[in-house]
Image (cartoon, rainbow, N blue to C red):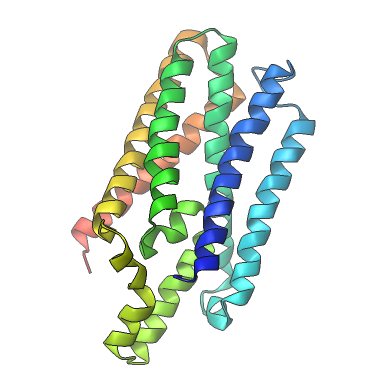
Length: 244
């Protein structure tokens, strides 16, 4: 986790996915080829899917290099986590599509949604994690859900093997001393930014639907936002009810 090249690859992948997800849809909009129903035409969607495929291929390569730990997770678990990684990329894409749809209707919701995205997603998450990413967010917050599960499983294996506590801390907490912030503060701030962004984007989208009506793109964005909100609330409730 603390290997400099691993950290560098994660940061490059994170920025690459965000830039591709933002730039490609807006190129479609300024080209005059996007529409209210499907967002981008298939030519632009293929370019975006190529970018997503590079991300998934990057994760597969890192999984291969991580050793045999992934085999203990089970096929269904790995498949569901891979789909979750891909859903996270599409989640951002549908937010961008909502920007374009709101802009096509000359709605002020475009500016509110765009400002929320820049402050909550780009600044509150991508930039913060580029400066310092704790182990709990190094993979999961960057849509490397399978690798995050591999890390958790590896931690369990290290505990089961009764490795010396000093060695565990040396491997997994070395870079914590290099940052003036603690893992808890970074994790709390990024999760708060993510939660507030989801709530605000959901409110903007529902407001848009009530004024202008819905479309497949806006409906998909609303559904995914609702899934993320419900899953996050369930995760928090589970930690409160069953802390261990």
